[in-house]
Length: 352
Picture 1 (cartoon, rainbow, N blue to C red):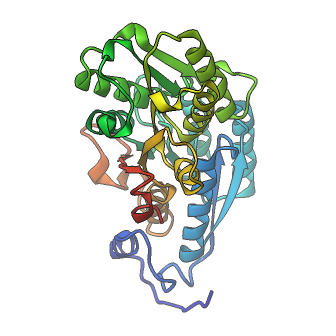
Picture 2: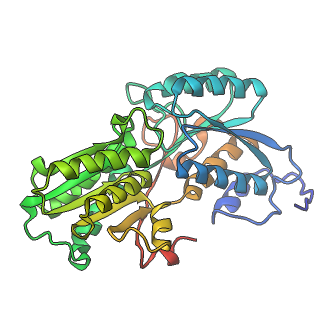
Picture 3: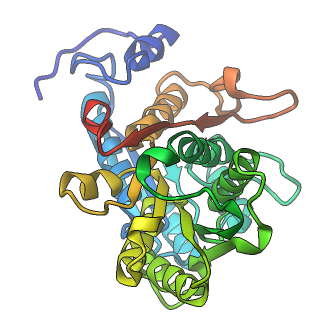
């Protein structure tokens, strides 16, 4: 990339202009500056979402002159803690964190604080046991996303050909992971929304396909497949199924279970994320996967990078970034991302 030395542009206007549209040209004020080194500490790179976050961070790194290193904890918090130690010893300028276990967030964040290295979280909350925010993070408006999925079904079920007229015999499957509160919140938002639209829905017909139960599986799609298959096989009396994958990997596993059970024509499946749904649709697959609440990795990455550059290049304090996203008495900002419902018929106009 051609570099121009642009003199001493280090103002708030930089960040505002740079990120107003999520992208800028290569002639940013970071050119000619020291190349910063950031590390992305992630729970597992088997997850497509995490791969997409890495890609987005590296794309922004090429624009704003920073290097992105990565660390894959393979879903083990002990591994992540060790990787943080190694990263800090290597002299990184800042860290992005998808913490493996929200309950361990205080231990992980304290390592960065002790080393005086700024950290910004992604997807999972960085809070202590009392609910105090420990560092800035970008998360999903989880319950809102679940509700959007429910509202799509309520407004569109008649167009799917799936018969929900006898709602008392309809079953609901929440494809989720009880280890992660964000996943649970998406599922809760989904069920709450469905109950408002379908007041006759029976609690006894609501089931959880809990991927955390598949402790030996690193493939969450496989875990979802096993859990969903068991639920469907155990309830032949259910006349139709409403299924939500709280992440697309759970949705993918559920689709395969639904197809294997031969109930795809009486199932409406929706998901949160969309990164795998659009791949299925592009291949004319998964006809029962009707919609997804789509959000992309760049939606997250642009905030993470904007905040980190404000700290590392403008000298802002961590507690001073994104004041518009701080609630009264809150020391650090929490940025919530929402999403847009898309289908196989509409995704091409939205997903680039």
